[in-house]
Length: 340
Image (cartoon, rainbow, N blue to C red; front, side, top):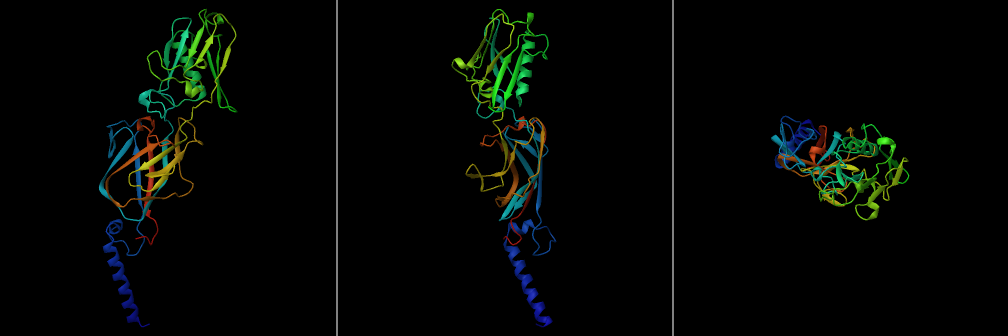
């Protein structure tokens, strides 16, 4: 082939490529001005930081909490995504602090009225409701808070005294609650005894018992623990049911420009899932996927992008319950260099 023929063929190829790019619309917008024709479009990094305790109506820079569950990012200029694009998580930092005990306002899945109340009748003084502050509790935390309640009520001299001892049996996943009279006056149970119950409703007429978390029923005789007065020996009660402290096993992140990904067999806007099993509660999780898991992206022009979290069952999680800033980075790219 002559030099002139080679130049003619290369010129025809360049013209064909230019025509294809001109006809591609969104694909043209992907390529930066001055990019080399035919070179694969460069990936777009997308990073977002959501402040701790982000409640509905709050605004931080370009990010707004629009309903308590959703973080909406305003983009300037708008983000243009071509067809056959994909996104995958690069890294994330998320607070493992969604509570397992709280009031109705805590938004705990499965407990619309809350689950942070225990009722105690101490020394015949009448049934009284006592409440655990919202939080992500372990077995040891339950014992600590029960003894704080006892100290505040004047039953024991110090919150570090162990009137209540709570133990978890790993083999059965059940709880043993021991009531120890040693720190009480005279080292014995009060003459009027102690009655602990997990019954619903409460004195305040709410169905907010802590019973299901600890493994006790909320109705029937098994929901009430009775301790006679005057005894000096500790009394232990074994929960009849499995405890349920970790009913959230994963955080799932959703994004409005994602499409056709699957969660529990249904398509949606799932970007990625963060398993919680290897992380310690009440810490900040640093997460980097071991492999690239790209998901399809819907083509279009985006002036805003929404993000929200759910648990493993699809229950939305309140942004306010993340007690440290949430940050994650996404890479958006063409699914292959030859994709159109």
